[in-house]
Amino acid sequence: MARAYLTEVRITDFGPYVTKLILPLDGKVKDGAITPDTFSVYVRRLDRFGKQLMVQKFRSFDPNVPKDMVESRGFLTVTGAYPSDLQGNRLEESDVVTLTIKHGPRIFLASETGQDGPFNYFINTVHTITQVKPFEDEKETVTGLVFDTKIGRRIPDIDGWINSISSFEECPLRYGYFAPQGPGEKKPLVIWLHGAGEGGRDVVAAYAGNKVVALSTPEVQAFFGEGGAYILAPQTETFWMDSGTGSIEANGKTKYGPALKACIDEFIRNNPSIDPDRVYIGGDSNGGFMTVRMILDYPDFFAAAFPVCEALPDKCISDEELLKIRNLPVWFTAAKTDTLVPPAEYAEPTYKRLLALGNKNVHFSYWDKIEDLHGLADPVDGKPYEYFGHFSWIPLFNNDCDFDYDGSKVVCGGKEVSVFQWLAMQKRGG
Image 1 (cartoon, one colour):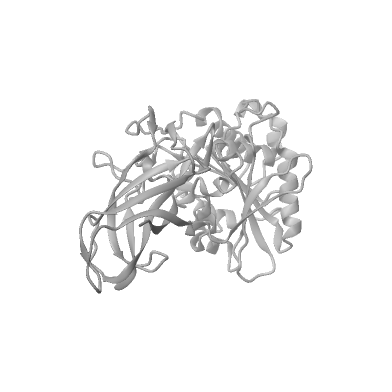
Image 2 (cartoon, rainbow, N blue to C red):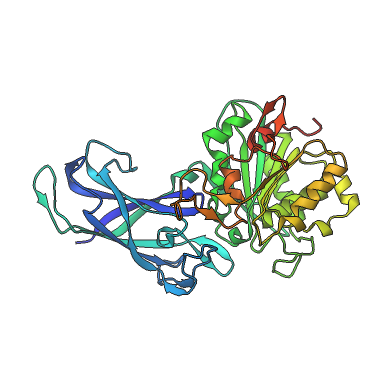
């Protein structure tokens, strides 16, 4: 008989991953009655329609992840098992059991996203959870359970996020947003612009394909005061770096400028508690390109910018354009190991030109390499896991960026600050 289960997905440093399977039982079990080897877990990763097994080449910059076309199915590793409620919270005794699943940047079978051409999107994962060892519940010895019917997927990290679309007739943009619930009449707005892989039509990917939801956590929201901050994450159907061909173009131009500005303006009109003097913009890679493009095109609109591994070639920025932002607070983030968007051709010369123009509030967290600083990925050869150098949004979302180009700590208002603390202190015309 088919039995039902629930999945829990968390938005990690390396994307959305299945981290828990939640199994309703017929009788109550005590903590310790079920162990990680009580069940085996087999997963099939299906396309977005839930019909076909994905057969694809996994896009990964990790040499230990297969690059060949492979069927997306196999066994997952169970790392823990305990009685719980239906949200996966541990209890001493319950008729629900949660299995925790091993996940990480090299365990692609636990990933909850796939690729449709250049874009990432949430897929359908189907698990077969088979009992391989007996256990005791409150009534009897239990054997032979099989769970193979998923009845729901929890993504607690996106709680509070809402999807919508702008009304700009020429080019409406889908977007996700987070509205703070704290007190206060005026609250800042933080705009995040996704990278190339998070475009397309699955708008959740714009804020959950990477750990953009970190911006809505209580820890980051607290930097913006008791009221918190609005977060807006628009999405393009192609790329921010598309000037009209439908492809990525390195010419410094975009067709999305008016559409994005209209989306932002409409969002502010619809949310009158937003402080128009505290509108911040940031983004990674393709979105980093668009961040710099927007502050050049609308230099008097934003209070500050925080481009990450930004992809607007410095050679495409004129002296006249840069003069417009010589007083705008800007914090760049990139890594020396980024071979996809080499900072020496992008962020580094732009940063130095702004310094030369006298910008006294421009900063650059220039990482030697991008490593797992928080023990969230398995070490390799006893050393912290090293990500591809382009992934400098990882330390950003972990609020690890607190140093400048010369390695010194960034100081603002007489105290050392991280990038989000600094951001919250900026005000247009301030």
